[in-house]
Length: 375
Figure (tube, rainbow, N blue to C red):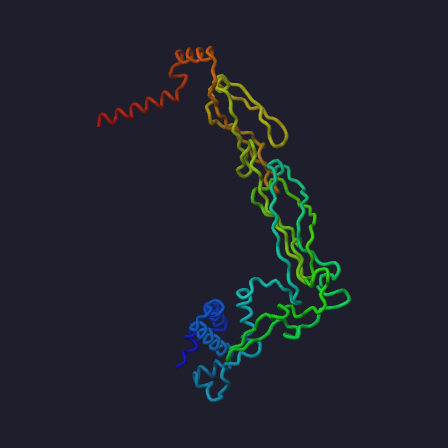
């Protein structure tokens, strides 16, 4: 016994055309044979879904079905509902499965195929990301064949209409009551074939050649940014539109500066005496200048000094980030006898006030261990 068409599609009897179409799309996508190869149950279910939708989407067939059920189409009634003729089912089938059966459609209405997108990896210096630059790159890619003007046909000849599909680019295959349109295997959906191919491009309509391109890299560009050059990808087959070229940028790690957005960070080692007595040092910045940083006496390792407006420019904005200098106090090494004597003398003369952090830390640590003994 045949299942109720409304139950097959999972809709109520009062469902409108929009609800019917949505239900059909969902179920047809789920049970399509291409997604369930070799599954006879799915193929049968797919046919049932198609039959139910073909009937209910037609107002006259639906009215007859609502009144008489499946009997309305038996014994030659209104037709068996299995035809799938005309454009109805074919149109919605193409709309639903166009992407699933061939990926994103890249052919134009004339059958010309769009060229592939290309990727180019480029590494630049941090200094170049700061100032911006115009870079020249050489990209091997397919370009339109000049000899045949991209048609793929030998000069003096033209492509001819495909005899298998009569220029439509598609052929229809029938399986019982079900009919499916597929891309023509003879012309690969172009609607035309080439009898005399161009000797230079072998009928492809494009040849491989290295091109020189100019790439504008704006100031403030960040690592991982992608730049798109429209129509600079591979040429399309037989005169089809070209793809795009994508430049993927990476910024080379810098010897001195680390970047975080628009801000820069730099670690600067200073001597123990400079940290203790105070002093200054000069640091180079990416704008080509040098800035003097004053170090107050008693500076500890890890202290940061902010240089406003000495960081990176913000992409396509007038703002500029800051540069943060972090001091690293360097412990003296390779001491002479006299230097060691002086440091030992300094140690004897030191008090808790000279090293408040270490004195306070060990005092708290002592209290911590004593508390264990009391418990």
